[in-house]
Image (cartoon, rainbow, N blue to C red; front, side, top):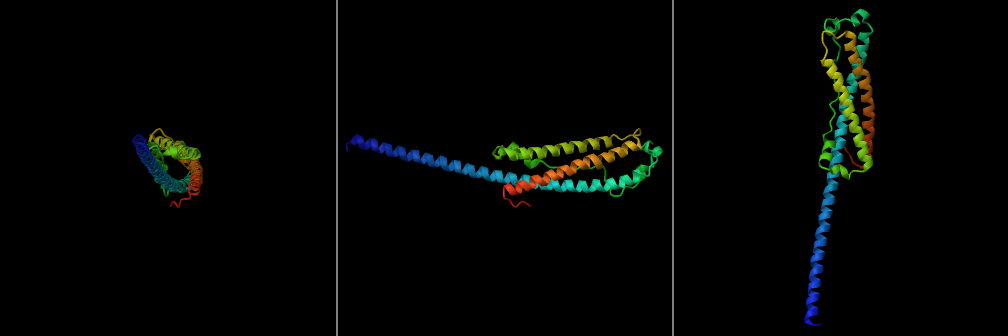
Length: 206
């Protein structure tokens, strides 16, 4: 074997060694990135489940409250005369009636920080399309519920001397019927989503 052949062979071996080193570097870098992404994905899903569980609890508290107020306000309404119903709310005796358990026009302040964070950091693109659709749907429903709750509260804040008793009672009934109905639908959807997330990802979320 002449010198030129040896030199060429030496260069080829060096090139192969360098190329293999680069390959290993890229391989382990990709592997580390993949593992990091997987951990971030699982952590994000865990936080989302915890958030939905919290929202479910917040919603249950409002469902209990609204069902309680519904019973109380129905018993008061059925004893009011037409004259009392159409009198000024500010001047009516109903403003002095003690409604047991009444704390105002309330609705659940549902959270969505965990879900929004997955979108901000871009990890949501790692989720299955079906999961993204499911989460987007439940959080969209939550937003609709909150907007409706705020609209009832805003109308209650606008109460003035021109507001009739029947109008104010109508707001309470809106809270204890329409809003309550949405709360129950949303609670059912939350149950379904939480169960699916726990099952599909085989996680023991608390």
